[in-house]
Amino acid sequence: MNKIVDIEENKAEKNPFSSIHVGEILCVGTELLLGQIINTNAAWLARQLTLLGISSYYQTVVGDNPDRVRLAMETAASRSDLIVVTGGLGPTADDLTMAIAAQVAGQKLVEHQESRAAIADFFHRLGRLNITDNNWKQAQLPEKARVMPNHNGTAPGAILEFFHQGKPKVLILLPGPPSEMTLMFQESAAPYLEMRTATRFRHHFVRLIGIGESAAETLLKDLIDDQHNPTLAPYASEGEVMFRVTQLVHDASEPDNTSGLLAEIQNRLGDYIYEIGPRNMPALVKDLLSEQHKTISFAESCTAGLIAATFGEISGVSAVFKGSIVAYANEVKINQLRVPVDILSEFGAVSEETAIAMAKGCRDVMNTDLAVSVTGIAGPDGGTDEKPVGLVYLAVASDRGVEVRRMQIPGNRARVRKVSTLNAFDLARKELLR
Image (tube, rainbow, N blue to C red; front, side):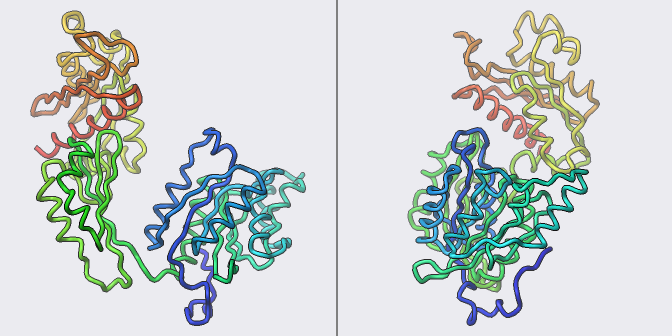
């Protein structure tokens, strides 16, 4: 890990930049404004700032326009101690973030020899000898910058300490590609910030399924209205609800005051809580399977592989996950999952009977301890009065038999598929906890 903090600068009384309380995130790139790229950097950085005990009240996205980027940086500097910037460090003509940051910090650009050598080495390893002026531009850095090496690309990052309106400010400049940004932040920016933050947040996440956000908030309304430290905040996404309990501490030795609040939440919402901790539903299912030395497979119709894709994002899942059969067409259900033709003829593809047959067939074909099936009408068309859009049947087969769940999921196609996926994991979870 690259420690870029001088020993002398660890002494708060001698360094005006040693106390960072409030930070904000600025993401540069016209492609973000146009929706061509999803801004995952902001969400990731927001979590990192929280873990470091830095409060964050603003996030901004700005296109590749010099005047607007400069205004965004100056506005951020007027209200926050720290500005974390991603994007605009590349080799093209519109990559101007570093130059604009130097102007805001009142510094001139100079060639950084170590970065130039790193760029040359990068292209040499690729077998490229014709390095252009645009590539060398990335070695032009503010004269007083703390340079952060890029171990996944060519653009170095920088930390700038400067005064704005008489107050100390810190600019952290990171590349836009997530693989470069996350590594650089972990290796260089995080150690720097750890030395300059005295506070930390203790977070506990209460995760619920089977209850809506409004109903859950109603049950906890008095706790939300009367919060101080620790605080209580609700979050909702398709099919589940989460409450964050956070305590602000100034020293690691301070007692954990969240236990009383967590106990009261559990008392009121216990039947809906599936986890108090960092794991989401798929991760919880993976851990339960690992603990019980069991395996799982999926038979997917309306989710079209989304369950498998979600599970496959978890590291180490191959130890418990054998595979998924996407059976959109009836002939695939018949030939691959051994669903009897007469079941499809009599009850249809979207039915309890078909879901049961899919789960049983998948368990046999995949030779797994559990198999979860899902079949439904995701829409926007295909629904009838008898079987409307959003009707979904899920089943889980195990050595205990088969459990079925019928759902009528409101919303568009994406929501129906996502909520179906979440409930597939929940069905597996409940089977594993039986």
